[in-house]
Image 1 (cartoon, rainbow, N blue to C red):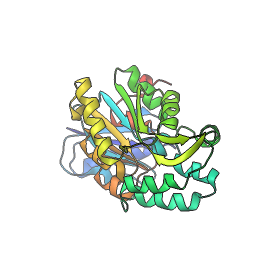
Image 2: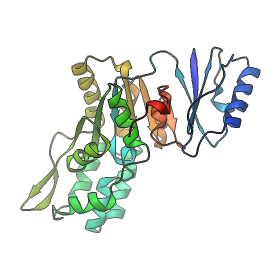
Image 3: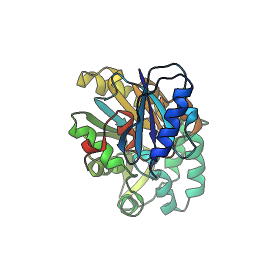
Image 4: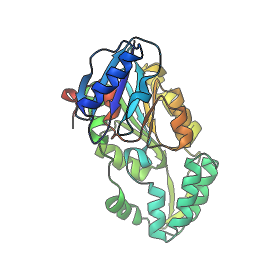
Length: 287
């Protein structure tokens, strides 16, 4: 038994769900009746073979998940451009007057065209001399949770799951974002500071693609979870190993390499769609 989950931040119309269910029936997929999880989400269980995602319109995200074991016990999320709407290093670079140079490296690294660790060192070097106080200015002016982030994290925590923010960005921001969203744990890289200014270096070892995968394994082992019990979400190439290892790997408005490898892809939905993928209805959501 599998489940087709339709989600969209703008809402999923009953007519859309009914049309998709009818197309599934005509294709011999034996769908059940559409079940509304929220204004933004509808699920349709089905027993037949085939892939029903193509029956959905371009206005919604359509993903197929297994009916068994949908609710996960551990949420691991990337931070920049996933839980928050910006890349913090690009915003710091704006304060330093080097945003175009840094943003170009960031984009190439997120597409998987550059080694993440080397790209991070190169970008941080361009921030040398920036006053440490700019970290606070940047956080207050530029960093905002993406829609649905707080609801996703707090709901999973309220339902008994562990929650971890694992970022290739910086711990100054991850600590504050984790508190704002409700994550129980956070890990990130540390910017070195000398005499009140950024030193242009980052503490080693760098938390990159392999380290994110290791964090998933380590947190799972400590909590006694199988990796099948994990839902992971990210947007860039450095999230790839973590996403592939998780029982439910979610690409959120992601670069192509990650989107192609993930179990589920969200381009039109907010982060509450990850609750819908687990079959968690809006009546159980928490702010």
